[in-house]
Image (cartoon, rainbow, N blue to C red):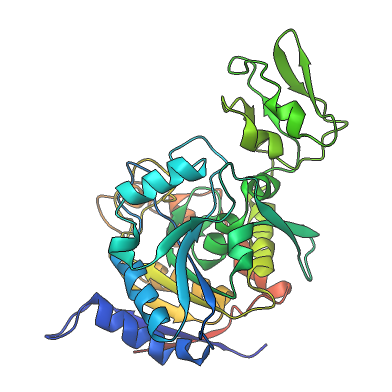
Length: 367
């Protein structure tokens, strides 16, 4: 596979420059305008941030990308899927409220917001994973799959399970519906917190396999019947049904890469990574710890594997923030493994390359 082109610009600003002009120049240099946007629906996949977290991308970045898409004739919208865990983005109404409270709305971003997997996270499309070895199909949010073009706009940061979160995680885990997220996180079946269960039978009504069993006013899941689709998790009004967190980190990274491939296969895609406020954990956390390294810059590429590796390499070249958790765990040269020693971020890009999603071999072009 030939070397992929990854374009980069730093955050230094000369007179007459700002983040918008530098990002616009980066997108043009990377060839985003080679995509035919005319009258096309364009999904800008982004993370709106959990309430309490302040490391997520500012809505300004979303507006810069949306404005450029509109100039090129496209019809952009911002999108993300609901979360599997209990938080401020577990259903579309809470998700939209959170997005608005964090500054994302049509006035600030210049485009509408759609939660891709619907009200309860159950509106998805089962998409074949071409070349996949861990997932035969991927459950992707319907609105994301309905788009003609996909742009990944992600905040590059650390992650406690995958090492880091970049383009692959933004598309793969972020593009998965609640059922898809469960499939990536779990090799098993859902479990019930009986202390929270009220026996409402919402899970039994939605299950096509008679998995939920109600006895003495409480639910239990018959794993011999359960297909692992996760629908019951989405409809439970008390968040009593939980995924079994029993997947290895290596398989999790592989499944994320396969889900990302399902999202981009068969249509144009483009990837933008903003490497600032590199927090040790995901923006899904309701807090944001101190950045582990100084801000780096902005990256753009047609290759989601290459851009992730380029961002990781750039972070690994940075000095450690002396007031971060990474400074407390000195001795491991890799910034992400140093932050979370049980992780190996390379397994994601390596699997992505193996299934034909992109190349780990890249050429970095400074703009």
